Each structure stands twice: as C-alpha cells, then as structure tokens.
Length: 406
Image (tube, rainbow, N blue to C red; front, side, top):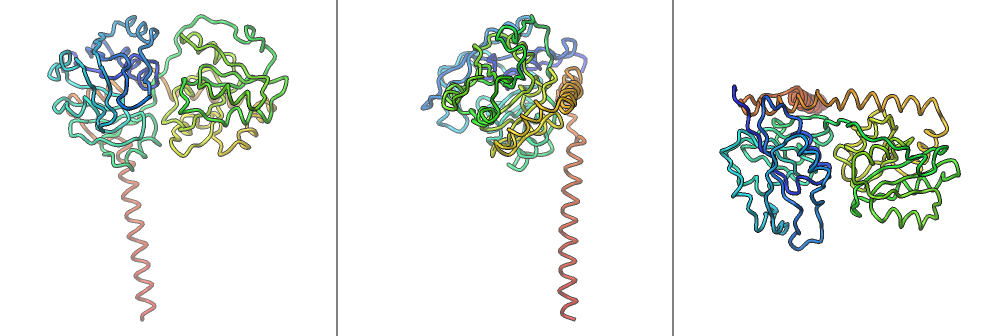
C-alpha cells in the first residue's frame, strides 16, 4: 500500500489518565507519520445511567501530550453512558456526525471485551481490539485482531470463548520521558530511610489492605511507606493500624511528579483488590530498578507475568512481610532484583520494538494478511498434544479392560 493507512482510535473518556487510555494515546502518538494518518476520537467523561460510577475525565497533561505530538484530535460529545443495556450505548451523542466509517482502513479500540457501542454498529471496517479487562468476549466478524498485554490474559480470554486465531500478545510500550528532577527524599525528610510505596488511581473499588497491613508488622524508625494518589481507604487503614511512618503525597498532576515519586522508593510494594491484567504502573517502577512485591487475587493475576523474576507475587500477608524484610535486610538479594527489574524493563518493554510490532499488526490487517503467529501455533500444537494424550489414556484403559476379560 503506497498511500498512508488511515487509522481511527475511538475511546470514551479517551484523554483521561487511565491505563487503557494512556496505552491508546501512546500508540496513536508514536505510529510512523510516513506510514499512518491518525485520527483520535475522544469525549469527556459523562454520567452513567443508574450508576454512581464516574469515569476519569479528560486530563490536561494527556491533552498536552497529544497536542505536542500533533495527533489529530476529534472531540465528540456524550450526554450519558447507558450501562443498563449490555452494549453500554452512548445517549445524546454527536459521534456519528463526526465519524464516517468509510474514511478509515482500520479502527483501534481499548475496551473490556464485551460487544460495545459504537463498535457493534461498525460492521465493514476492520477493527483491532485491545482488551484490558476480562468481562466478556466479542467475536464480531470484522474484529480481525485482538491484542492482549500478557499471555495469562490471552489464555483467560480464550477460555471465556474468544477466538484464539485473532490473538496477538504484546508488552505495552513504555518510555520514561525526560523530566524535571526533584529530590523527594530530601523534600519529605526520608534521606536515610528504606522506603516502600506505590501509586494508584483514586478508586475505592481497587483498594487492597495487604501492603499497609504487611508494613504494620515491620514498621520502624529506619523504614517508611509512601503512597501517591490512591483511595481514601488507605488513609483510614493507616489510622486504624496506628501507623506513624506513612506519608500520603498530594495528587500528582504531572508525570514529573510520578517519576520523582518512583525515584525516591527502594521497593514498589504493590497491591490491588482485583489484580492486574498486565500492570503498567509496575512496568514503570521496574524502569527505575525497583524490586516489586505484590499479591495474588481471585480476579486478575497478569502482574505475575509482568513482574517475573524482578520480585515476588505472594499468597498472603505473612509472605508479603517476609519479602519486605528480605529486601531490606539482604543487600545482595536487593541488588540482584533491582538489576533484574531494570534489565527486564529494557528487554520486555522496549518502546521501539513494541511500536514496530503494533505497526506490523495494523499493516497485516489492512492488507488482509491474517495468519497464525507463533502463539497461535504453540496453542494449537499444545491442544493437539492434549487430545492425543487423552486418546492414548482411553486406549490404554480399554486395553486393560479387555485383558481383564480374557
């Protein structure tokens, strides 16, 4: 294809600072300008029908990021998001006045997985889905590829009924931009402390009691715990536990503040009630050479794959405490994991490599080159092996029965 490929990104609340939105922003802002012409459709947050849930609103820093990279932003309006219907339709929207399907070669989304407005009404243009939750699956015929950020997530999606032939696995591309450095350890009087901490969006639904509960077992004058953003429940928990060496930083308005926060930590002590399908915040922490501690959940455990040998995902509070102690008291162990974390970020989340992989997926979809990749073949071969194994077991069982009858 000699001309540029016309790509439309479409996302409700698409310029907010959520993980899904920032993933789409990063891709849209970094696709090759020589190969792709990009339009990014977004709206501000809107109320949900019969729900008190509030989606994150447009973030000034995200808007600035996209404008600085000359992405063509197209803002539409939505009066309400109707979550009382399965497709979460947009009410009082001018989206269709601005968007014309025939103008694009491919459409890229970021969603939870279920059939969703407006995509279930887009039937002719190829769609590339990026799935960030595991609520459901959608095998609509023009969804040509479904990108997952971990193999764990892809396998769960397939078990839920997703078409394995469409699966592509990438690691989210992250680039630590240049930032204005500030010594947060000096600023918060923590120069000589061993500092644990994490950052998280302000959402009571993802609050995990495990990190602070574990810290309460080892709190001393030579260590400290710092939380950036996060639910108010963490402050309530710290008060209830009687913790003295915990600091809650003001809400971060820029990535400079997030990076300076990470720079001050010794350990990224992660916790989240519903776990992670991948864990972008964890990946960013590893870029700063931070060993990571987290815990399993009954929902999502994609962070186990993200962390790998750069830390430990534990089963309970006691194991969390043990790992906190080991990282603080064993310098050689700490240095080993710190190096692994930094190397893992460089090798696994290579910005250029992942962007190139996404570009190739788009080109192949547009050129109708939908082929099995190595992941598809490995899954298929594994399935064939399992079937053969079951058949062999049945044949052996039948042989034994016949021999017993002779």
